[in-house]
Image (cartoon, rainbow, N blue to C red; front, side, top):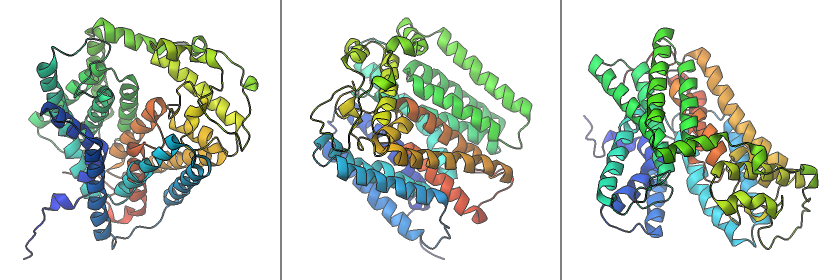
Length: 445
C-alpha cells in the first residue's frame, strides 16, 4: 500500500486550468474585500506559481501516449510567427514589447494545460466550475453591501475595485452555466441535485444579464446551443424543454432590468454605417519600413468621434473592425506587426480591434491570419467529427470552445486569449489520446 503524501486533486491539471482562467478574479476579489492592495508583483508570483505547478504536472504526464496532431503544428507555427513579428516590428516600441510577457503565460501555458488534460481531469474541472460561479456571486453581493455607499449607479456596477470586473465575473458565470448543463445532462443525478443545478443555471443567466457584459452573454447562449446539439442519449423533448426554461429565465431577466442596463442592451442594434462610413480604397498603404511614431488612425480623425463621445462601445467596435480590415488591406502580406494595431487606430497605442481573427490578419498578415483561423477551424472540425464517436467530453469542450471563440470576436486579443488556447489544447488532447478515453456512453462523476 502506497502512502500518498500529496492529495490526488493537487496532481490534476484541472486546478491550474481553473486558476489560470478564473483564479486571478478570486484573488482580486478576496484582496479587495480584505482591504489589501493587489500589487503587480503579486500577479507575477501568481503566474510563476502556475508555471511551476504545470511544469511538474507536464513532467509527470510524459509517459502517457500523446501522438502529435495538426493543432500542435499550427499552434507552434502561430506562436513562432507572433514572436518573429514582435522582434522584427516591435523592438523599438515599448508598448509592443510589453506584450511579449503575455505569450508564455496567456498563450503557451493554457495550451499546455489543455494538452495534458485527461477525462478524469475534465470531471474535476466541471465540479470546480459549477460551484465557482455561485461563489463569485456571493463575493460580489458581499462587496456590494460593503461598498454600496461609494458605488455609483450606471449601466454596469464595478466590483472589487476593478474596472473590468463585470467582464471577468461574466466569464466565470458563463463557464459555470455551461459546466452545470454538462453535469445535468451527462451525469446521472438525483431529482434534488437536478433541481439544484437548474437553480444554479437560472441564477447564472439572470446574473449574466444584470452584469451586462453583452458579448459574453451572447457567446454563452451560442455555446449552450452547440452543447445541446452535441448532447447524445438525451431525449430531444428534454433538450428543447431545457432551452425553453433558459429562454424564459432570460426574458424574465430582461423584463425586470433597470433602465440603465436596458439602454445598454438597446445599443446592440447600432447601425455600423452610422458609426463611420469609408471606402477602403482610400485607406493609406503601409510600406514594410514605415516608421510609426504615434497613433495615426488609418481611417482618419473623423472616424474617432465614437471614441471621443465615449457613449456607445458598439459604435467603437464597428470602427475598430473597419480599421482592422483597412490595416490588413494596407499591409496584406506581413501585417503591421504584432501588438502594433493601436498605432493605426483610434484606440491608440496598445489598442487592439477586439476580434482575434481580425487582429491576426491586421497585425500578422495573411500568413499569420490563416494560421490562426486554421487552428480555430481545426478545433471546430475536430469537435464536430468527434460527435460521431460519441466522446463523452464533447458537449463540454464544444460548448466552451464556441463560447470563448465567439466572445473573442467582441473582446479578444490573441495575445491574451487564454481560454481559447486552453480549449484548443483540450481538443488536441481528446484527439491524440482517444484510445485511453471512454468514447461511448455517459460518464459518471
